[in-house]
Length: 367
Ligand SMILES: [Zn+2]
Image (tube, rainbow, N blue to C red; front, top):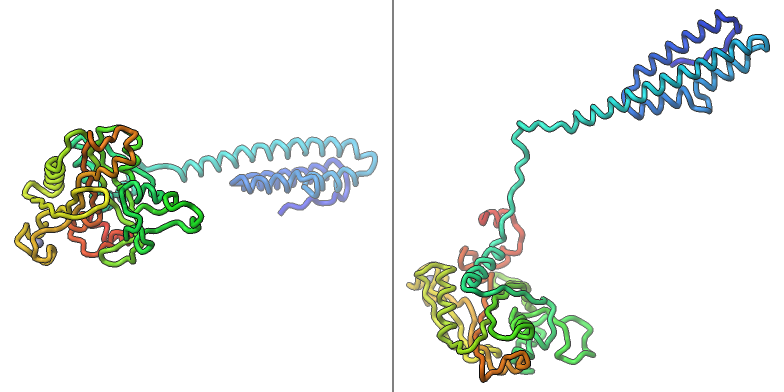
């Protein structure tokens, strides 16, 4: 690399030779500059105040020159300063131009290449089933509502006519939030055990008539196994109007099950009990697998229980009476179904945990 020489004498000829050598070195180094970092190093080597080539020229040539030569040497050094400065500037433009064009080359897009295929996501079987159920009721004119997953005891139990010692309130079933012992029972927070509390919210917010379906997550204190999960999904339905009868409930659910599973699906209503409906029914559909002849899936009965339903208990209306729900004037029905149970029946899944495992090999089957 070029080193600034001491001048043996300060004659014009010696100076000319030294300047020629210096400019040749400058030219060679400038030509080698390829990028912005290299250019910065180049600039500093030549122009840095401390120990740059020009500083050395000033020290070794000008300051060391004897008195009579100083004027002549000073002029040459001034000229050199300008030349170096111009050369460094010119190199900068070239270096940044090179950087830009290499950046452009790197970003060039070949539009003829096939491109990166991104796998398309699909609805999870639980969400797909839930949406299908909701759509069936939307086509019958139902609106869709949602409610909070953290509820008070009042909405989850009391307003739904659960007697104070009903086993569903038990900590075996319900996930209560900790540290609420000081609160009154009705104000204690819990993770809703069913979507039914939204019935109360809806009736508090709107006077009759009501036609609504409510999809959502619910929580139970259950140990996960092939048929249980502490979190699962329900779709709740509520209809309140004048002159709504059990016949409307039967017709609605029979139509909904046929719309979901096919026109040959039959429904059957068994007497049951829920605190917030009276009378109550468990609804079974004819077996998906055997069509009613009897098989392992339906335990040889020909029927599969899929939902709970019933006429809204007049006691429930008492909690929202102020909003136009006079039990002497309105009547209605409610129903609820477990989405996982229906998805498992539709898709022939025998372990509920598969639905939550996130295993792509399992989920890909539904793509
Ligand atoms: Zn069967």
